Length: 107
Image 1 (spheres, one colour):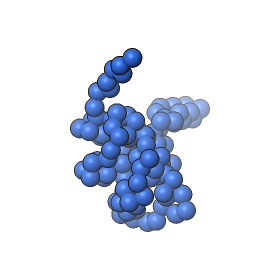
Image 2: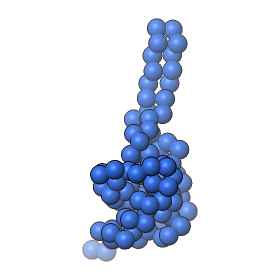
Image 3: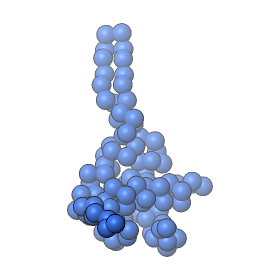
Image 4: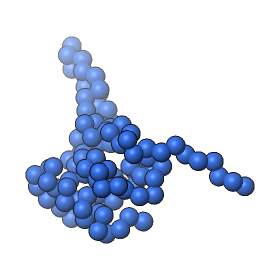
């Protein structure tokens, strides 16, 4: 589990990036982004330098950002990237410096 102090630190950074409060769901969104980042990076910890990237992921989740995947003008067709909340501007690829390879388990 992620400690309350870590969630509070990341949330503060996310709110500074967003320029406003994340509201009642801020802690839940922050923890969700942190867990996704930890899983993707195969980590059980969050180094302080990694907090800013997780904060950016949190803002993406909070604001429900969607990226346009394709656009057709004749007869108007817009397709959205449904993964944009986690892979848009604040993508998981930004976590690459903290990513660890998985390890084989014995037994």
